[in-house]
Every structure is written in structure tokens, then in C-alpha cells.
Length: 215
Image (cartoon, rainbow, N blue to C red; front, side, top):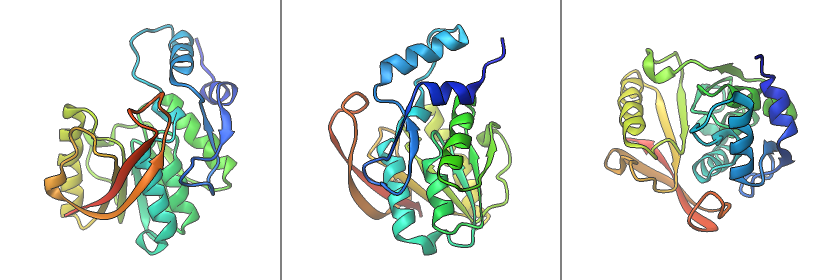
């Protein structure tokens, strides 16, 4: 069965602006469970991971806000957006003047969402579904990571890969609301935000969220 991922994204979301980044418009879901179930129905599978692409997570919102407010961080630079989800952070980077953005996510619904969201915001990004963590670090000046430290195995792989990137002179910025496996001992805080989020996804309506730089 051939799935039109972009059509699914458009049919099951509304065009909304994340609270912290009203400059950006995204195809987002109102509730987690219905779209999660529809994704499983579409693929004929159960036990799939949540549709991360359908929501504006706190870490991503904080990182996008920071980029838009401090465009010198990425202006004229080659940017990688890791585990992109909706593509919100990469779109913000292009709006702030990045030379290029590579948005990477292994979920094909996510890569479809990135494409339609980039079009919605009139920016151009490159998109890949390759698992970047399983490969050598591509050429880049900045790597942006939002909300990726929620699971131990993923967090460990991510940190190892980011340390390789840093050794190549790449600047690493991370947006995170204090997930369980955030390696704070390796990070320097550069900004803090109070991010409105859905209680359908989080344990509070406001998540105190920081942007960090890998030290």
C-alpha cells in the first residue's frame, strides 16, 4: 500500500502558530491520541511511537525563539536540524538567515510534515529520512537539537554523535525542558523561557525550558 504522507498530514491537522513563535505557522494536531490512532490505522501497525511531528514541543519552541531573537547565531551558516519533527526549528533558522538547513528525521510522516510546513512558511530546506546518528557528521556550522533527550539509549547515541560534531568545530545548540537524560554536566545555559504547552502532552501547562550550548 502506498501512503501519501503529505496528504495525511494536511488532512489530520490544523494550521496553527506555536505560542512562543507566532511568526511560524505549522500543521499541528489538537490532541495526541486521535492522530496517534489514525497513524497506526494508516500504517496497519500498533505500538508505534507518538507522532512527534504533529506537535510544537517545548524544547523546539524555545530553540526556535532563541534563533529568531539572536539571528547572528545562525546567519549565513550551514545548519542541521536533528530529529526535526515538524521542522519548526529549521524553518526558524531559515527565517533568521541561515545559508542552508538540512532537516533530518527518520519518520516519513515527519519528513512530509517538514516539506508542507516549509512551503507554508515560504522557506526552502533540504530534508532527509536517514538516521544521521548512524553516520558520519555531515558538513555544517551549527547543529540544532530540540527535545531529544527523553530516552536513555537515544540520548547516549545523540551525545556521542554531537561530541564528534563539536570536535569538528560545529556549534551545538539544544532546546530542552529538563528531560530525564539531558546531559547538563556537558552543557552551558544560554537562555530560558516559559513555554505554553498542551496538558495532553506534558505534566504542566507551562514548561520552564532552556536553550543550551554543548560546552
